[in-house]
Length: 198
Image 1 (cartoon, rainbow, N blue to C red):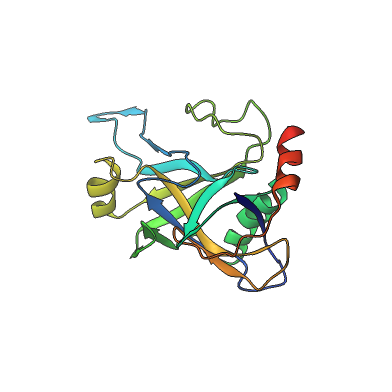
Image 2 (cartoon, rainbow, N blue to C red):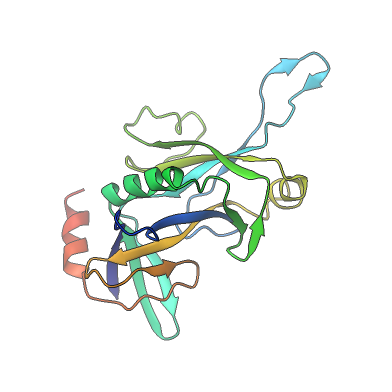
């Protein structure tokens, strides 16, 4: 099966992540956790903060895709993950979110973003075991319907990015969504070597 490395062309105004979707089955197979306030304050006990924390992009993780009869994997390098996280905020996309890549949402804002740098990262405190180089995201949910009907009910479990990337053959940018349409080019040997060295 073909494996394609995607990257960001920083000079292309379209390239990068335009939104974060909350989904039931994240392609990166890493669920977020809903953070709740642990502070006890007068009569208000365990008041909800309404913050979701989870992985937005995991470096070098093969992500399965199927387009009609074509099956293939895509992946992002550590460098691309970092660039994607930076450009997401530089271009002011922190308020762009969707539900299952179909329904635009309001009332969700990215309020914290970081790259996991070492094993002592705060992700471990919250029970999230993600590799070094992962882009972590915290989103504030101010939309009552989303919080009650989707987050608290467990209908959504993680983040999934929406954006435009190019592959190593530098073809024009193509959208990367749940039903992405990318032509597969063989980069299997390169990826095998990459994973052997980790």
